[in-house]
Length: 231
Image (cartoon, rainbow, N blue to C red):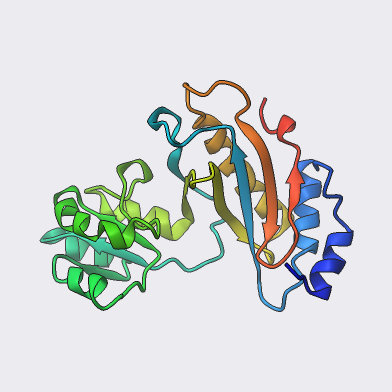
């Protein structure tokens, strides 16, 4: 893949074979974000898990202390009083069964997170083929299947992110924007890593964190010293 001049210049300051301490890695990844827009800083965590085994799956959520820097659009599936509660809590869209054809047939996906009350999961389940591949299906482990829609919406708007293994057993999550201070990114990164380390499956034998890489949207990755992350 051919890279641009900016990428090449940014890459010169990074030793690809080195694992940096967290503070230095964050400093370097901020310097590597040279695009003309405010790039997202992402963490890519390669694990030793085998997601084909249920007991080695990782899925959860954590509220980043400084948020992600992105305005998150929330869709809530509910009925009765919970519809009004969701709107009052700041949901961007609320509804029930009437939303099914709009999503299934019209391809409407103007939302980033879906929350559902448990009594609506029978309805939402019909959208599995649409929402599932996009990582949008509500899930109790992520706190998005709940009767407490106010708390769910509040957490999401405050910077709650979901993490899970992809098919290659890697976790990809944003921890903020390049415009964040190094301290803000460090706080968010440490909060995420604390949650990931705590989520280590008991059934896993051997190395858990194979590699941890920080990268801006358009720039090169910076490897973090995993030995110092696991105490």
